[in-house]
Image (cartoon, rainbow, N blue to C red; front, side):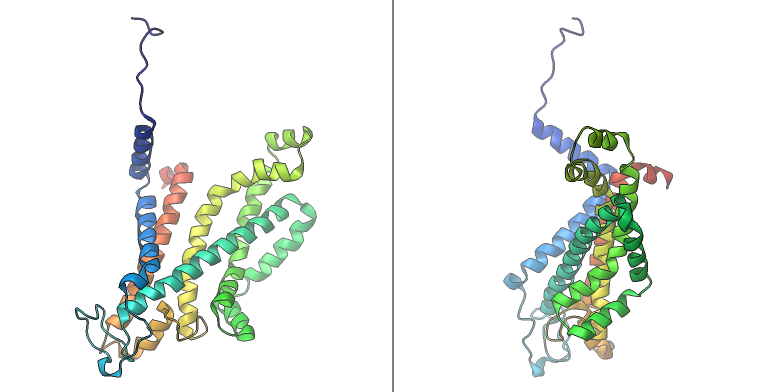
Length: 293
């Protein structure tokens, strides 16, 4: 039987997809570990009203009780369930981190494309980004919150603004390299309009780097929110947050250590999951860097 007459074996599409996913998991396990942990945390936070108690319920007769079958993580100095407050606090941290990363990514993408493609705006935008980078993130956030008052909305804005320079500079560097490539010049010479060239040829080149940088921004935003809440300038005190839970319980570490360990461990696991996801995405989109390491 010749090569041309040999029968072609049919492989189902579903089997190809499963094998491709299994290869992806074997080659880049950090994507699975970080993404799985982050997905689990999001599900637990969204489903908190179904299995967690009332995080605002206070019982003075149950102050600083140890973990039990009724209160898994014990109670705090006001008799509130630490487990319920930790689970509901995950909502604040994840919401602030994800929304801040999304807003910073979209705004930085727009500003970076303009800075990289329109040379007349490049110097102005880059000097503005340099000015923002020179201001510490915590101080800028505290100044904005002091002017407007505490709240989740202003907290997201205060965290988003300091993250703009890193994303803007990243997108600008990618756009500067892509705009000089032959296929972009050919599209412009062929009569393609600039918005179409940006959408079809330049923006797709920024997606891999943006995904990695967005994960880094998300982890940094979660830590910044916890730090601001710990200092008392983040979310209002009545809203459970990992930062204000640690701040309000630091005096009772020897008596009720779970009041600090529970939110602290959850904060560390969340940041670890986001960083693992970012490292996995970097290895996925840049396998040469993995081989160099």
